[in-house]
Length: 366
Image (tube, rainbow, N blue to C red):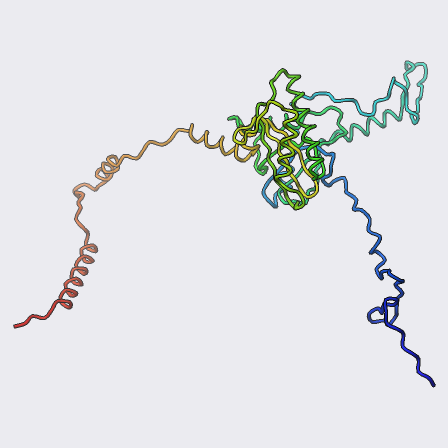
């Protein structure tokens, strides 16, 4: 009986381990069905992504939850007392026209003839529920670095720069109304963009233009100087010098009379790059608020309080001597003579020195 010829070895078949079954890959194909079906990663709404705005909070590692709870409490207090500037109404109906899904119900004549729009009532209730929470945590994946995303469903909200400035002004003051324990630093983040030089430059120009327009409306002069602060975390595909130079050129276009001043800038543009996103922050009290470090400002407050506190008078040795003399028992005069133990030790030392001298002395020659 003729033997069966072995199957040719080549790219057409792949032998699976342990089962002896061959699987046809096809010409130029792959045995892994997922090799050529990779889909783009979907970004969850809780992750840091372009288009967000809010507040950057830094703290020590492993206490991020405590820092977030503390930030929520402090920001809620400041928000309630902040000067809120109304924004444009979102989703408002034009010319008072009802929506297509609205259901109007007319009450009986005895009730005054009012009309209830159930769809509008439900929409108002949902909007109210969304507005109850002002901030959300945007996950960054970096220990000690948290971004609090502001709720965009809130139609009227204060500027993030005003909120942070009020907290830091309280830290500088003596009363310390908004004292914090876990938060190390707070920065207002006007916008988040992808960590690309072109998009960072466009964002810097847009934010600086908005801040300059606010100063013009308030009747304040434009900033005479500026500086660029750049820091990156878990991002190795972006050049620091290139971004700083491009951002400085963009700021110069919006502030033509401003000069670069790294020691005492009137306005500072902070670029915090985290992975593939860049948080653009424009602050106007960089040196006054110690680089927006809450911990440094509170340390300064404690130093001032300790300096203003009354100090104890210096110790007078004369009073101590008088007290010792007064506390001496009657009939016993204070003396400087050594006690018996000290005398014994001193005698032993003298004997030892005398013995050494006898041993090391040269012999006498008759």
